[in-house]
Image (cartoon, rainbow, N blue to C red; front, side, top):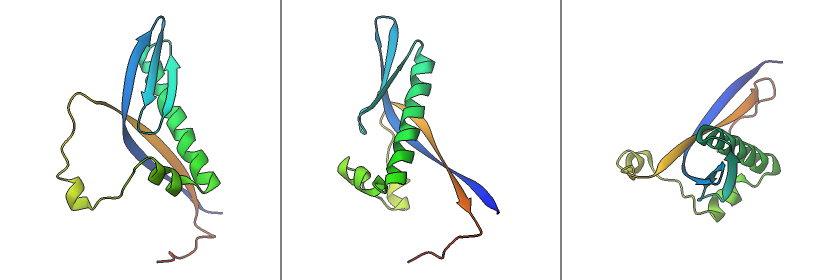
Amino acid sequence: MKTITIHFSLHLPAKLRRKKKWFLASCPILDVHSQGETEEQAKKNLAEALTLFFISCHERGTLDAVLKEYGFTPIQPSVYEKTPTISGIEYIDVPIPFYVNMNNRQRCHA
């Protein structure tokens, strides 16, 4: 069986704050939260929580519905290239790994 690995990466806004001895990390647009003993650990834990969130949505077949529910809308590449970055907002990169079985691959339905 021949498989290949595909990686998607999302660049999502994240908020970090300190609460006593813990750092709290959140992705407010998806209502996903995590924590860590250091700022870096909190970010790493948030990225892992977001990765698992997206994988779970994909496995349950709800990814499209979840993205729509949280207000995600596709945009054309020409619009994306002109979209300014918002200063003062921290972002986190979230890896979403997939395996593709090349032996059982079906043609695109489009």
